Image (cartoon, rainbow, N blue to C red; front, side, top):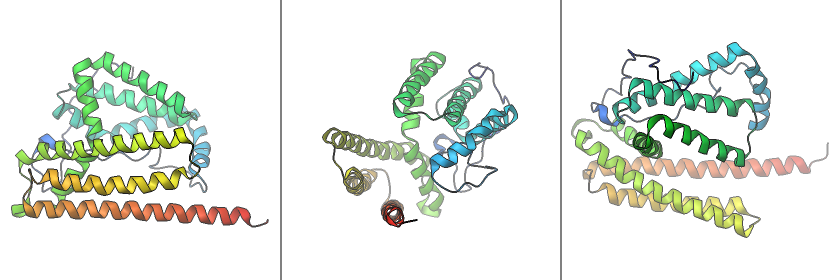
Length: 273
């Protein structure tokens, strides 16, 4: 079964890190593409919900489901490698963790799930992981999942650094730790602000939240700069600042595009047929 502790790939090869990267202890894990995004046989125009509705019947075919599962397992190959090397999972435990994740995604891909149901299923998913792994390894997994964005950022830094600017082995985990702490603080602040907006019932929820999100990102980037000073050299910090600035620029551009899309949509609805 999906959760059976049987090693799926007992001789699973180590996934190579970028050429400039030598320490195996800090492999990052970019999130895989959305389920079913790769190789989707139908190009659908319209909203994401419309795309999902058109794709959902594909899962009625058993062969398609099996192929989809295998594609997802391959997409999570880096995570499997990290569970073994960073968290001390056995190959069987790593395979079982990935299998549970894939099965949860499959269930969500086959039916529309509201937020309440999703929260309940997430709690059940965590309970199943805890029962399978034990409390200690489950906590390690939680910490790893929460720090993925910081690990991805550090991976970007390692890819850009070279020569005397290359990150040393002893810098990797301390840097991930300080970046993750600042990211967690920003996320907590945004979650609290989102909840307060919902409680007060603001009509311009999106605008207010987006403005606060941009403010929090700027503050988080400054805190990351300050905290990283204890780990990085001056030239390395300059590289970090450049990456963070690009992230902020992309965020602001996405907000501009979202505002433009909403404006165009309103204008289209106002025009008579």
